[in-house]
Image 1 (cartoon, rainbow, N blue to C red):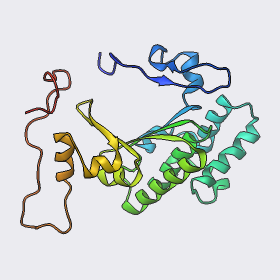
Image 2 (cartoon, rainbow, N blue to C red):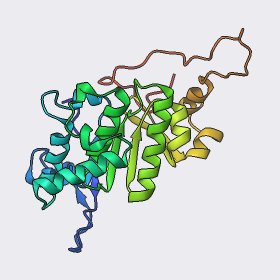
Image 3 (tube, rainbow, N blue to C red):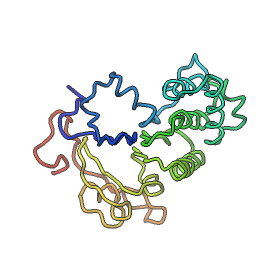
Length: 241
């Protein structure tokens, strides 16, 4: 069925001091006790649309506190204080007041910051950021990117940053995985991808970036052809002519 993992592994090293090696997350039921213990604590997600991710009938504070109380041995009062500190850390003004706000009372930028605070509430080892700068203005986008970079350095958190924006990739990524139709086309350090791309799809993506200094009368490069159906991929590389 769509979405089922049919090959490969998802290895995760819990690093719990018990000498346990990497475990294969793909073998766990998504609703199992083991996955619930990992999800939100060791691995956290920043979803693409925080307005849809937050419950509109609960305050952002209660939703962040719920994750903290689930994974940490703290009281409700302590969880509230941790939540205020996380909101302050991600740049939410007056966090002691905003903690009692609902998601629909916040601007897009503040909602995104609150979602980042919830993802970081339990100091995850891995943060998956799914298009976190989509649908926000460029000024807020730059602030969010700088925030994620600073938090990554402070907490030593690994980040998987999912985006279609090549400018964002150039700004935040250390290592890049280029994907097409659900398959990996090319991987490498960010400088190699931008300055020495090897795969035709990577080169085509880079050529499609508009230039401020190019000939305005020249047509923008396009990637020719039609996208194959994901359930009926061609043999070999799905990008081949």
